[in-house]
Amino acid sequence: MIVVTGATGNIGQPLTQALAEAGRPVTAVSRHKAAVPNGVRHVAADLAEPTSLKPALAGAKALFLLLSGDLHATGASPADIISEAAVSGVRRVVLLSTQGVVTRPFGTTRIAMRALEHMLRKSGLEWAILRPGGFASNALWWAESVRAHQVVAAPFGDVGVPIIDPADIAAVAAACLLDDLHTGGVYELTGPEVITPRQQAEAIAVALGSPVRFHELTRDEAKAAMTQSMPAELADDTLEILGSPSPAEQRVSPDVQRVLGRAPRPFADWAARNVAAFR
Image (tube, rainbow, N blue to C red; front, side, top):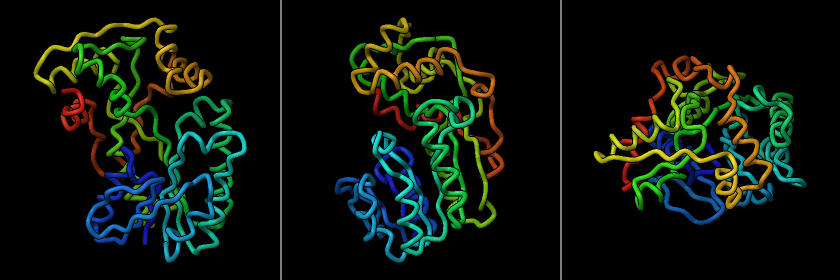
């Protein structure tokens, strides 16, 4: 049995599907009841309460661990999830970490994530660590304005990073869960090319078959919009990466190719598959 946390999200959904298609028994975990592929067991659990995972972990041999933002908050104890997994007999954990533990190591959440990585390494379990950069699915922030006004509004229109398709993260996670070859691997996951917000808008327009205008926000305008859905500290942190990415954050990693034997999907592919969100 393989347990997938965050099973209703942009990574968890394709990962659950891929494991089911590979013929593996899967337990999908989410906070609330959710539809899952045929043959997949669903368990509702709150990762903020690690003991609530007991029913999901019973009989499991592997765990994909994706932490939601609240699990990085003060007082949260995601390390207890790994301990609970070990007690339950799980042998392998694949952890979704972040590129920022290396490129920007001193932020609060990244300090916590680096500590969790260290704890996993010392746990005695088999492990693999995935460190993606920016997600292609962050473009969904623009879906409402594209639908209503045919506009993508974003800061730093001509500053790019090699964002990754979440489906590629899921594919790498599946490989790490299924193949002993990846035990002890630490994989930096990026897309195939640096792409700017302006170029993303152009790709969405191609997918739609209709024009999409790009409107460049100031940093202050972008922060005001972002703080409606995230803490100001996180908004500032995100804007710093988007506006002034380091050479390491603009580097295209070979790790997707190494694991999957194919290049990562470009943003245009993600836009074409998700075009309904922008109509």
